[in-house]
Length: 305
Image: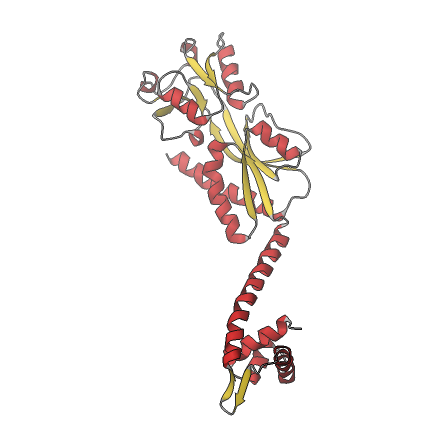
């Protein structure tokens, strides 16, 4: 029966052209090289090598067999590297939950960096933060990207580990060609008659911020529509039908919208990388490190803008 050592010996003989150099290349003795070669020839019942005073060359059959073997060994070496990388990474596939507006800005670069380090695959599941946390606690994803309000954190507990990626101020998103966009700073006290597009989830950070600010001014926000579809939200605002709370990272520049600060303190939106407490696969840790590096660059760029 053939084995890998025999095949590697044959390829080394082809490349080195000498049994002595083959032995040195593989770290074997010449008798060991000769033994592997003869065993392989006996198994195939053909002569694979011609020896002369000018060196050792493969026969025509030897060359044909070696060319086929080379592809097989290359595939085996690649498979070994992949399995070794996945073993070291602690997972074959890493699943991460993320909300769309930030995931599309941070994850591609972080995944590219991870892929350069390991062969582990990454699957992204798009969901709102509360659903991401539920999937994480249920073991359906390895990690997540979520957001909440630092002053009123929504996701706390002994079972979660959060690492801040971005901390951005909330702004009011308005139609770029509308009257409100002509003002450098907006006063929510003067916006009691303005319609708002809000999330369907009452616990969502921007909803809590909007209601807190409006109620402190003695009115409830008027709701035009509840939606978690970012394109719908941007489209409604761009048409001048209402306003929405947003951050710089969440704005889709394909829509004619603008962000304006408010007189009132709208607070911050904290974006975090979240995992369960306890051991996690190494690949998850590496992905978190990559996300932090990408977020640092994006945060610096946003600050300059």
